[in-house]
Figure 1 (cartoon, one colour):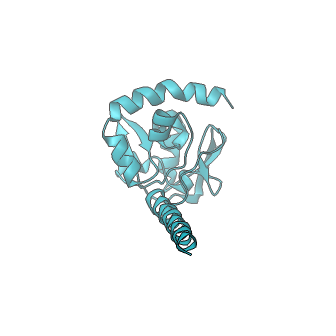
Figure 2: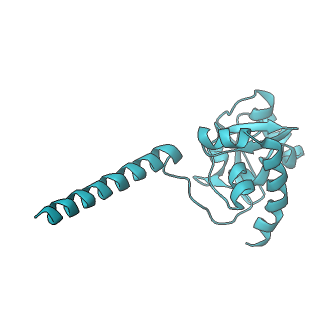
Figure 3: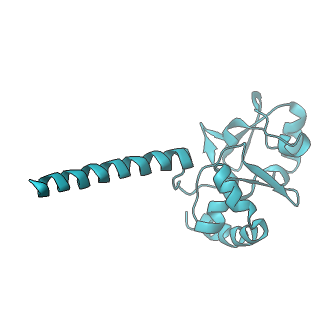
Length: 164
């Protein structure tokens, strides 16, 4: 009887522990931090940056939703912009405004050599280049060694794309 009770307690404890880990992982990573298929641009709902205007990060220093009325195709993805002026600015030199590593999580590209999703509100501009991350925890990790992560990410990105 004591063995059965002990086993029951261990099983119940294990199930509770697994549940806590699952909940914590979902809360911690938002439930969407998983490896993605290789592509030149991360899209969400069929849109680069999930429809966020990439130029706005540079000219108003925050993510701004783009509009379908101001869209453009570039690098295999549809991009939305908040204005016709921002669309024209982007199309004049897309590489200057598009996020690095195709908009995939910059930390994951550098640290894991893998492609993971991002959220437009977790961003950094370094030397006029836009980098995105998955959430605030990942952004904190990124911020601890931005220069090192950029160097590793820049080295890994061509190999990641070549493996497609």
